Length: 101
Image (tube, rainbow, N blue to C red; front, side):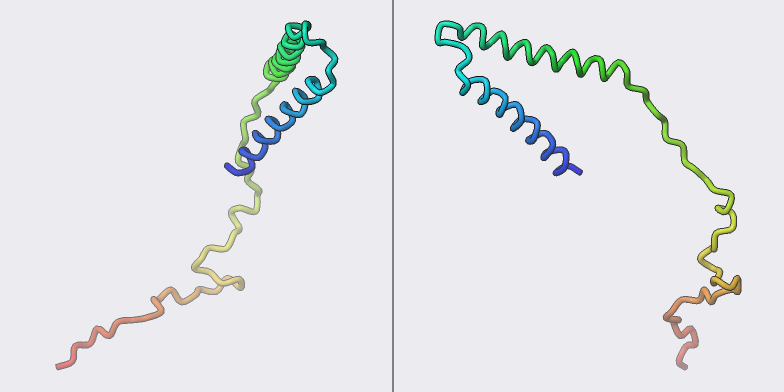
């Protein structure tokens, strides 16, 4: 799970870098309009912050409830075989309790 989250984080950083490169490489702004380019980046950041805020405000927490089925009481116990006969619960290796005299 940690690697999946790290990959998602790096993917979002890469996507942001592609946006910056696309805006910078397109040379929409002249050298004397570099302030407008910075405002463009700030506007993009503010827009994404507003979108995130709207999503966060509309989020509804759903509490997970453990679902139980009516058949849960009918499950096999480890001491029963599938045909409901008792199984042998003795240990596989029994120690010899008879002492050698």
